[in-house]
Image (cartoon, rainbow, N blue to C red; front, side, top):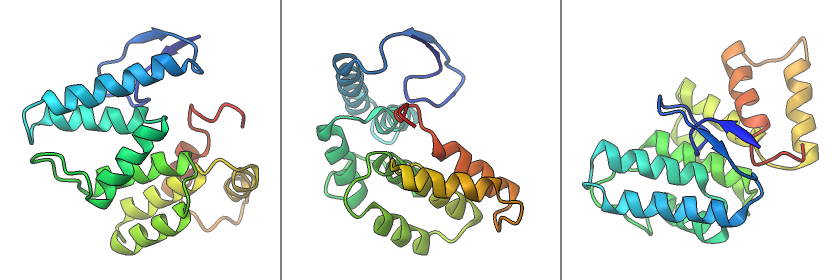
Amino acid sequence: TEISATASGRSRGFDSVFYFDPQDKVFKNNIEKTYWSLMQKSIPGSDTQRLWLENYIGAAHSTEAVDRIIAVLSGMTKIKKQKIDQDLRWSILSKLAQHNIKNISELIAAETKKDTSARGIKSSYSALASIPTLENKKKWFYELIDKNSKFSNEQQLAVMRGLFPADQMEF
């Protein structure tokens, strides 16, 4: 399979072409370990440290990585001089939603109460749309095609971004 993007799935100007089987757990585990290691070796509080943390969050798929980002979100795991700001919180919640962790809808609702900005609302819609159940996907898909949708174009775009993450090929 050819994938043109960063390993985290986000384009940051460092696009590369990777050839790998998306189901290759050994490769994915190595990516996780490499990103976490590079993040830890980076200068605390630096942009590089944040970049590796963002990539780690994006690549998180194993139980260990998911548990680690839960601990980062909750504050149980601290990353030296790295503020877990609202953007990182939403990135973590989106990844956790993709894994459909226990109580994810409640965690998203609680974060939405804290972040009532337009960006926060869009992030919550995107995270909710990424929950991997057929019923959830149908709900959000039908909301997108509803001519009387209550969502703005920007909000619909946020839903589309979360609706079919690369890890959810079965949908």
